[in-house]
Image (cartoon, rainbow, N blue to C red):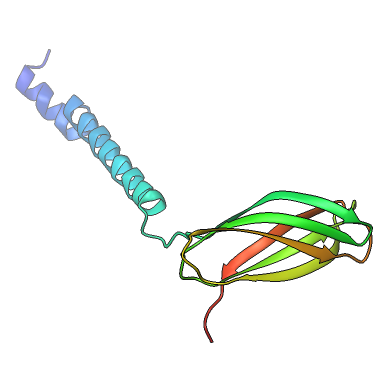
Length: 137
C-alpha cells in the first residue's frame, strides 16, 4: 500500500483527481452558457432594425368576371407615404389583376382602404401582396 501523499502525487501526475474533471466541467458549462447568452442577445436583443410597417387583408369580394374588390389595412408611421401592391389571383393561383395603391401621409398610423382591380379573367381571391414606404426622390 502507498501512503496518501504518494497516492495524491500519482493522481495529480496522471490526471486521476476529482478536482481536475470538476474544473473542466465547470469551465465547459460556463463557456456554453456564455455562448448561448451571446446568441440570445444577438437574435432577440433588438439591435436589428425591425420594421414598423404592417399590412393585412380584411376582406375581398369577386364583383364580376373582370373585377375584384379588396379591403385592407396598413399600419405605419403617420407621416409616411405608403405604396401597396394589390393582386387578384385565379383558381390556379396565377395573377390575373395587379394594382399599386398609394396611401398619402396623414395623422393616423392605421389606414384602411378599399380598391377595385380589373382582371384579365375570373379571379377567386384578392389580396395585398406587399407594402413599402415611399422614399421621396
